Structure formats: C-alpha cells, structure tokens
Image (cartoon, rainbow, N blue to C red; front, side, top):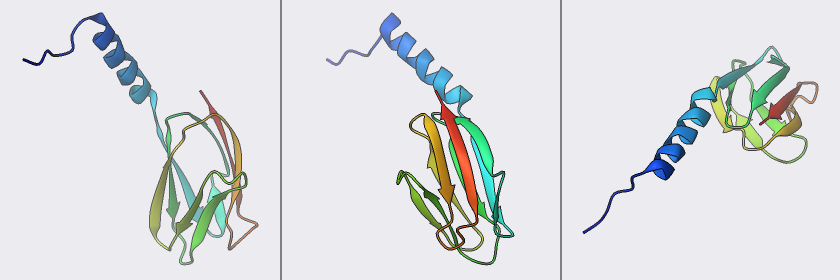
Length: 106
C-alpha cells in the first residue's frame, strides 16, 4: 500500500511553491521600428520575458554574456524564464544598434 505525503513538510513545500509562482510576472519587450521597448527593465528570478517582434523583419534577442540567443521571425513571440540574478545586456545580431538591458534580482 502506498502512503500519500502529508504533514507540515509537504504543506510548507506547497506554500513555498505557491508564493514563488504567485509573484512571478510576465514582462513584454517589443521589437518595433528597429528598437526594443522598453529598452531597460527590472525583473526577478522566475519572471518570464516575452519578446514580441512587431516588425516586418527578423530580429534576435542575444545576450552579450552568451546566456541566450533567440531568433524572432517577423510577427512572432519568444519567451524566456529568468533563472538567475544579474544584469544582462542584449542586442539584435541583425541590427546591432538595437540594445537592451535586463536587471534580474532574487
């Protein structure tokens, strides 16, 4: 016979998971008219960044530190869940003047 998890340890784990997912946010960054908007954002570990390419040309969201590199064809969305704290500068490989910065805290 299997026994279900019960007791304060399992309850505390559920509360911790609920608290961390409850504060996670979705932050949208739009690539439009050859610019990222907003160009600078503050976020928390666990937040989701959604890049929306509203242009008629392809863009990338490429982290200068190599953490991620997302190709965004025209009129598409790409998502990234932030997994660690720090500041990441990013740019578009096709249009290097398109730059942005994400500051991630715990």
